Structure formats: structure tokens, C-alpha cells
Amino acid sequence: MTVFERDDRIGGLLMYGIPAMKLEKEIVDRRVKLLAEEGVTFVTSTWVGKNYPTQRLRTDFDAVVLCGGATQARDLPIEGRNLAGIHYAMEYLLKNTKSLLDSNHADRRFIDAKDKHVVVIGGGDTGTDCVGTAMRHGCKSLVQFEILARPPEARAADNPWPQWPRIYKMDYGQEEAAAVFGADPRRYAVVTKRFVGTERGDVKELHTVQIEWQRDGGKVVMREIPGTEKVWPADLVFLAMGFLGPEREGLLGELGVKIDGRGNVVTDADKQTSVSNVFAAGDMARGQSLIVWAINEGRAAARGVDKFLMGETLLP
Image 1 (cartoon, rainbow, N blue to C red):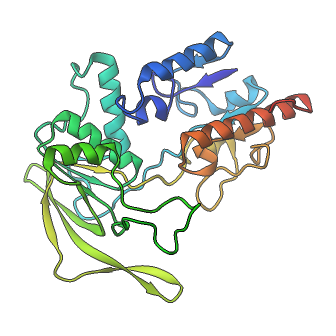
Image 2: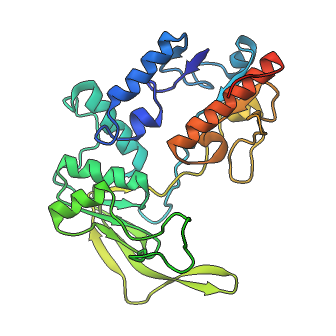
């Protein structure tokens, strides 16, 4: 069993996507060490499709499992997007954790939010991690935009138990920002219209408008509210608006696996793709999701590979 990883450390999102204050990296390293002791070979700094030919996977291995994640981030292609200081959230989080592990930030090879006006666009877990990281850097101010309306304090009539409660709550990042700045940093039902920069090409502010969601027949549509335009100072902007599936250039295209309408790799019940000895699991096959789903899908892929190689499987 060989695991190829394009980063310099094993762990994927557990290593570089989730900040150290949320998941101590010693826990990830401990698991990697156990796997290595069980016989798994880890090969880092190896990007299949770039510095390792894709075709070698088919010739050197009897079965291949694709677990590359859903790393294609959703962009915000509006006026001023090319200004310096606007980054994808994962670029911010990855560089911060790598610099922290490499040198305790002494190498300065990270995006520093100290004394900066920070805007986070997106309200999910990744956005929260950007908030928590910027707070630890010592940002001057912080605001987080969500495109949806503020959730109610209690369950709405169309959100009964046992559904996941869609109610207002603060995660650790918002709680920390509120403790320092006095209030929840989130602003709801906000859409960013354009970025404005300095003469040097650095972002200095962004322009937003409030929206409301209305029903139009059988669907809900977004409508801008006139007179609600606002300008926000911004030295750094982090785009945390979710992901659009796996990167389709290179590995996936060269393997020729089938892709569904959402951009994910198509698999059957055994996690096998349209290519006979190629399997896929985790975010690459189901889209961005939770770690528990990655574990579940990894076990399913192991069963599928065992069945493919041996003709049967006893794996749970």
C-alpha cells in the first residue's frame, strides 16, 4: 500500500486545512506513524499528473484509490478580484499552518493579518477557521459576510426534530471575535458587489448591498434592497464560499474516469469508478463533506478494492 501526497506532510485537510488550535497536529502524526508501522508507504511532495506520471499508477499498481478531495474553490469573479490581498481561504489556512509547523512563523512565509482590516466572505467551517486564525494574528478589525439570512433563535416550523437544527449559534471563531470586538462579526444577507484598490493594486475596501430572499413560484430568489449599499475597509479578504468538487485537469482527465453533473467522480456501491481498477472515496466522490464521511467512504473503498483483487471480502 502506497499513499502519494502532493504536499510535504501527510494528512490532507486534517494537516493543513484545519488550524492547529482546532486539531493538534500531533494527533494526525500519531495516526500516520501507526499506519506506517502497519506497512503503509507514504510518499510526500509527489503530485500525480505533474511530477509523477499518471500512467505509472496503472502499470505499477493493481488498484488505485482516488482520495484527492474537493479542492476546487468557488471564486467571486467581480470587479477588482485581481487586486492583491484577496485570497482563497485554503491558501490562507495552509500557509499559516505550514509556517507554524516549519518555524513557529519565524520564516514569515504566511499571510499575516496582524493590524489588518480583515473580511471573510462565507459562513461555513472554513470561514470560521479564517476568523479564528485572523484573531490569533491580531487583526485590527474583522467582519464575516453570509449570503443567507440570520437563522432564528429557535427551530422554525419547517425544521422539526430530528432534522439538523437550523438555528442561530456562534462557533469558536465568532465567539473569540465577539470577546475582542464586542459583537458577533457576521453580517447576514450581504452580497459583495466589487472590490476597490489603491494605486499600487492592493485591495483597500469592498462594496456590498443587503439582499432579501423571496419566493417566486416554486423557487426562492435573491433581491437586492435599494439604499442598503455600504463600503467596508479591507486590507485582506478571504474567500470561503465552499468548493466545486475535485480539480479536473491532470489526474482525473488522464485516467478518464466519469464525472457527474456536480463535478464529482462517479462511483458504484463498491466505490469503483468507470475505470475498472480505479476507485474513489471521500470528497472527491461525494463533494465537500465531513471527516466522518471520509472515514466511512475510505472503509467502503477498502472493501471494494479487497473484493476486486480477491473476488470476495470479509472486511466490515
